[in-house]
Length: 138
Image (cartoon, rainbow, N blue to C red):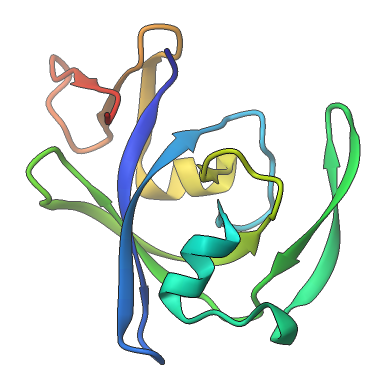
């Protein structure tokens, strides 16, 4: 198991939003908050790939290319009941080869996600009481 959380991503320009489960990937490094999503999710948000910059992304296994938005999108971390735990603005990376959406280390930090156990899928939010343990989103 891994840590996965539920987020809401909004596109105010298109008055659209998606709620999706994302992998909390501390090994995905970025200088600023980034949420990597699939082309299907980008389409649901009204994000057009032909208007995005293509960037080279360094992976542990080599290099790949992703589309990245110039604009920032509101991203909300949700609890199991759909309540907002925290909000940030992030760029979107759209990767046609992505097997599941993920968030980078900068996004994890800014959303306030504190991983208790990657293997068991346990986490808490920075504002939770110290004894709070949340389970990975299903």
